[in-house]
Amino acid sequence: MRFVSLAVLAPIALAACAPQPMTLKQAMAYCQEKADAAAGVHGNVGLSLGTGGTSASLSLSVSDSYLRGDDPKIVYDTCMNNLSANGQITGE
Image 1 (cartoon, rainbow, N blue to C red):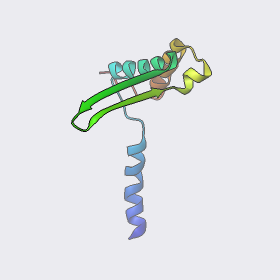
Image 2 (cartoon, helix red, strand yellow; image 1 turned 45 degrees about the vertical axis):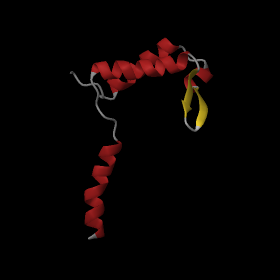
Image 3 (cartoon, one colour; image 1 turned 90 degrees about the vertical axis):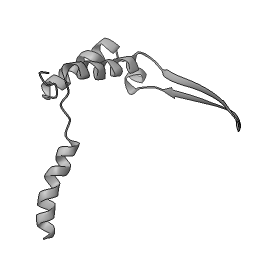
Image 4 (cartoon, rainbow, N blue to C red; image 1 turned 180 degrees about the vertical axis):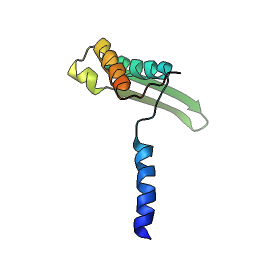
């Protein structure tokens, strides 16, 4: 019984981990985000006032592409090429 359960559940679990197909518009937005991350440090600053007082927050993110000094245009092109080669971009 255990083998049967494993034989049935393993392909389902692997399918859930497989790259999901996306439209061309989604792929372009995804790759643009990666290119933007390669262009520099991004951050958010927050300030809130409430009955409990004030609070502030700061968030910074740095991509590995930025740290390596990758050209954002090349990051975008590579991303699109990889998605195309892997068949992740649908014709929609």
